[in-house]
Image (cartoon, rainbow, N blue to C red; front, side):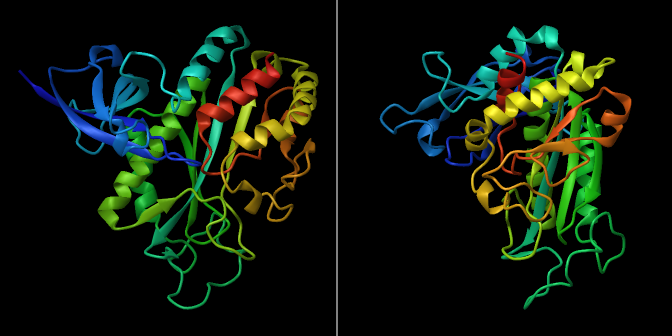
Length: 336
């Protein structure tokens, strides 16, 4: 019988920013859906998810994609974490989103997540001089040429891997700070978008191993006059995408304004270092929304304003945010 390698991937218990973990299980025969796979235990005391005297935790596969690195019938499996008695583990943020997605399924929520990240070569961003700094920002965003763009070979490899895995990757681009990039996932439903962001992150880290380069989601990887890294989250409901939806979008913005402080707590650690009011951000202490305003908390795209329907962009989430938490917050606030 054909042997298949399945990479069980999960989110650990590190705080304030969780890490990805994974291990390989060999199974017999082709896997066509997540429910084909068995649950699998792991040592939670080594991932900050259990105490040593009672350390067993359980992985339950919930979303599978093709493994673009190993190829063949091998797969990657995103997993939820459960306690040994089958109850939801406290680190499992997907479980709440699962319930919210079910409760508000008639809203037909769509998410598009723009994941920024920064490559590091040792202790400095990739492409930066050993001593000092590169030329000031300005020519790097969507740039071309070996003097302005660093790490394109890794980015192309990652993009092709995500596409070959069957993921809904909608684009990539070099970002404002040298060594910084972005990929976009979606539009997808809340669970699918969040799962794919985590899986795309795992692939980014794994491919970086082959190049000897690391990727960080630190929201402010370099202090000074350099852009931070975010995860702008585009959101819409069915009503927003229909004629006259701009009114629904504006009502959603007012709801978000009333819950700003609650959301910021969920939007990623050290986000205050990024949301300063400079570098295309709104201060973490303020909330505003506007058309085509990249200095706003919520941007309404120009096309949406012109058409009278479309989507909104929440510019507050940091690069290290948990998409399960962000998607949950948006659905719970806007759809309730």
